Length: 192
Image 1 (cartoon, rainbow, N blue to C red):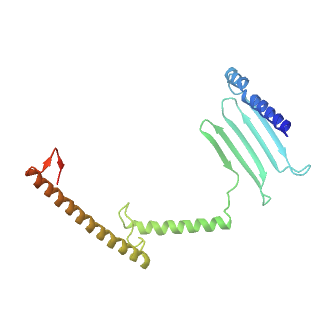
Image 2: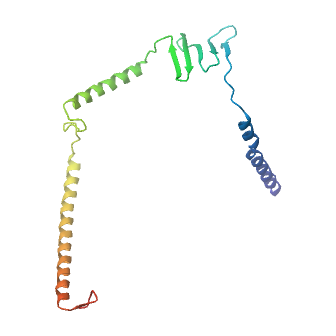
Image 3: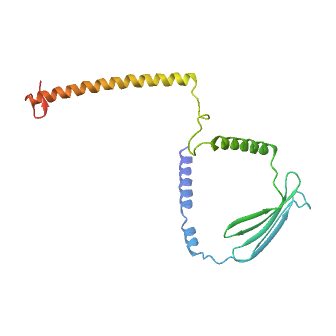
C-alpha cells in the first residue's frame, strides 16, 4: 500500500511540474505579430444521409475586417431556413429569410404579458409618477391587523416605561446636582 501511495505522489508532483511550466506559451504570445487579415473564402455542405444536403455555409472576407456569409439549414418542420450576415467593426448583422413564428405557448405568454402591462399602465395613468395606487396597495388581513395592533401596544408600553426611567434618572441627576451645591460631592464623585 505504501508503494502505491509513493507512486501516486510522484505522479502528482510530475503532473503539477509539467502543467505549471507555461513559459513556452508566454514566449510564443510575445513573439507573435498580428498581421492584417488575409482575404479568404470557404464553403461547405453537409447532410445526415449520403447524397442529402441539409445544411450549408459560405463565408467571404475581403481582408479589411468585413466578413459576409450565409448559412442554410433544414428546421424541424422541414423548412429550409437561410441566414445572410455581415460582420464588421459594428458587430454581427444577420438577415433572416423567414419570419419567426411563435409557438402557442409563446403566443399565450405574450398575450398575458401585454394584458398585465396595459392593466398596470392604466392603473398608473391617473397617478403621480413614483406613487403607488392606494387601490392597488396591499390590504392587511385580520391576522396582520391584530399583530400590528399588538406591536403598537407593546411599543407604547415600552415607550412609557422608558419615559418613566428617564424621568427617574433625571430626578437622581437633579438631586445629585443639588447636593453638590452643598458640598457633598468631592472631585466630581458622589459620596453619600
